[in-house]
Length: 589
Image 1 (cartoon, rainbow, N blue to C red):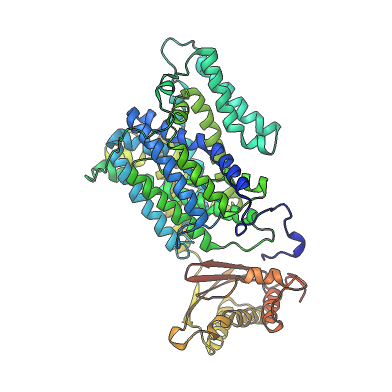
Image 2: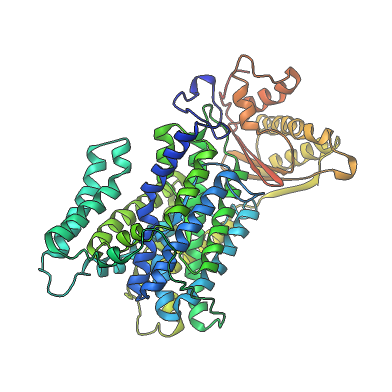
């Protein structure tokens, strides 16, 4: 059960989201955030376009557009526009998850087809944001984790190509030494040091590798840097939109949708993490903020597609900086957005990053894909790898690998099917989703009660829970606990209903399922009630400000339930309560 006493208050949070730090501090942190993330934002489109054989003009335009859009979406995440934006400091930037599928799209259909694929996939994020509550059983952390651990598999061919990307006539040791220095610095610095130096490890690795490449082997070509202007706009190389919808488009669309799902899950994780580090006193997770973060992610990808550049996503490094500095004010997000947009008008700085040699970039992305794999495994382990989940993940991961490298019946997979099944993320993602849906459909039958919140609703709920306990063959003690949980929950949900006009009566959906000797109850309704988990945490405080008559249902619910989770979405609340037959000591009554 979520809850926190006053002793859990964090003393290292200097400025909460609603507070405003001094302008010099906000501006300084904005520059720091931007510099840490700049290399990733610029290198992602650089790798994608150079590997795919795109023009220099298109590359310059894509980098410019990526920086501007990263700035706009970072500001939207902080400021929140309507239901778009998290309301927290979430740094947005180019995502490496799309590199493999984007390279294939450019090679087969050009930048115009890539732009349309990005626009189409962005609509999925808007759908996920608006229907997150309904899709919570299908698009699970197991799905996201499986697709994440397949991203390194799909990026491996690209990394190998960049490792060997050295000028003709260069010594044979050039690639290995340059990549080795970059990798060593990027890995060893965070292993040896902590704090701010660890956050700068990727940038230090790139600088070290570039120095070896330029001073030691002369493969860092700075001619474009000398020619670039200090301030200005790139040549207009907008690729346009290819609306022909050729077979290549439909073959690649599932891959883009799979990666978009992963991006949404990544954003979900970052939106949860930033909430954890932003407040002095722990709060329950606000899923409305997560919906806003995913919607902003979708808006960023929509803008990226329209502008002809790479998709973007949230950057977890921003969360590390927020935790390190203790400054989580929304003003920081606005400053970061302004700095990103300003960098877009500095062609010489961008040319310096674009010219970074291939082995340096490859070594940098080795660390990136390694962290992506670990992040995926963390999600899977946090979700729990029981026999069923382990079987689903194992089968999906194996199929993703063998189809990615054409190890299974390549002679039978040709034409459009070759493009469709030749991407490990597509095969693995579809596999895990289909197996998840199968497990959900064939699982234990759930009982449902759909009614309206009113003074008479309790009798319906009570009768429903009695029927549910009888069908499961539970004893009188378990039935009593279920009925007590139902009664106290209805009192809590009924508070907002008491202030609602009869014509605006809210609906209630109660879903009951069993997990061995335990019962899981989901109360789905629309309320204006404060988060129940936060209210339970307040019960431990001496002066919580909660009226005595309002405390009683909360205390009783905490006594009878073994766990309580309140998920608040836009227009709907889901109160999930687990009830076990054995008494649970969850707190003093």
